[in-house]
Length: 94
Image 1 (cartoon, rainbow, N blue to C red):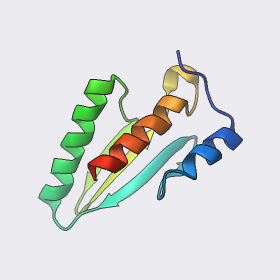
Image 2 (image 1 turned 30 degrees about the vertical axis):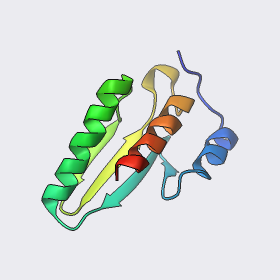
Image 3 (image 1 turned 60 degrees about the vertical axis):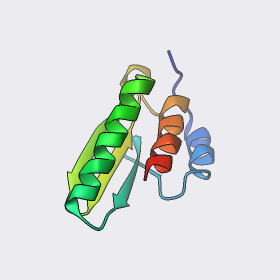
Image 4 (image 1 turned 180 degrees about the horizontal axis):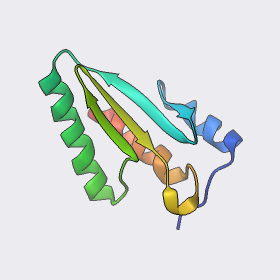
């Protein structure tokens, strides 16, 4: 099981992840798209990457022209290295 990171460790990890922030105990980012369909396509890519990694977003919210992705590891009680790794992977999909 992954260990919960301290706030300092999370903030250090977020420095390498532009646009991601710690909000209410989880890391999240909003991605913008020109169309609803582009956002949906991105969300599907995120879902497939999550399945492959066996580490899923806490939230994957599709809005018009935007998709919000959030990670936290519930079994660890907070943000872990796995969450930061998946956030970095999501950035490559955008």
